Length: 103
Image 1 (spheres, rainbow, N blue to C red):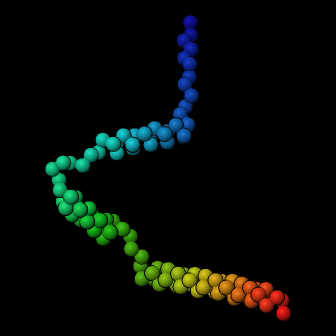
Image 2: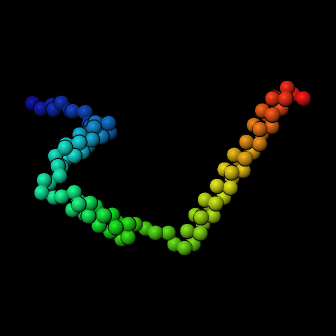
């Protein structure tokens, strides 16, 4: 006699995401602030943790990368300025031509 087990379907990514989301919501609900810690103490802790993360846990660009990124930003700003100026010029000419009655 062979025992046949009924197979349950494997969970889908959607159901796994829903389970994870529910777990995060429950953790957030259960994580209440301690009543004996003042607002200033919590702010101080936040500032200290932010400083440590900014200085020690972040990767900063090298001087070469910084120059390259700066040039990219300057080029992008110039391109958008030229594009905006061109559109402005064309629309100004169009509206002035239409305003004069096509004369």
